[in-house]
Image (cartoon, rainbow over all chains, first blue to last red; front, side, top):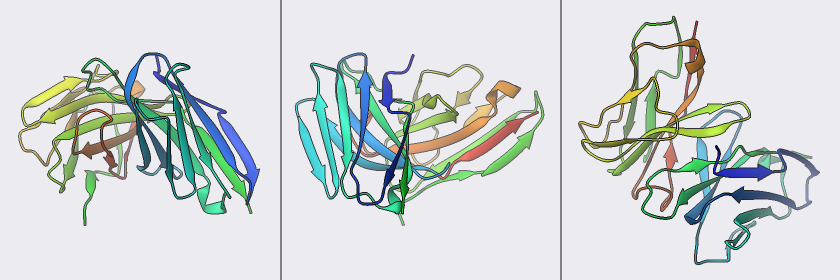
Length: 112
Length: 114
């Protein structure tokens, strides 16, 4: 079964609004990453947060990690039409595992 | 330019006809992976490799083989493709294993098995 599940599955907002998407996972992790995918293309790395971090920022992106709830959120502030894409979280389980597990993704549409 | 290349980008084949999808990276990365992407299921890891001659199964390895004879190349082999392997395939590489570092993705290979 999937380690990560994103919520919501789809999100439609107006340009300038903030977009928040969530990722929940089932087991303890070492690291969690967020990726963006534009329409069937290769994924692009956005941000990595480690299990001992609670929050990270990168430009208009803010990621939080709550290991007690096994969840992470990605906030995109002041969204732009170019942010329209699918967003995925990816996790690596703790305990020496090498596998990477992706969630099912959130499809974001930003309306100009 | 740092990149991951995959070939072919599109492939239509028939059940049982062996095929290979090539993947190459020019960043001297040790960790490479293959993923398949299906609607509603996200990306699922097929196989990964931590270095030359070191490979291991991901979550959906059945029906696939890989090899890592050189650091830059990580081909995906379907010895007897079946229609349920119709999917979008991505190769990725990173400096470190697992999700400890940025994974760089190739452009994808869209495979249809009739």
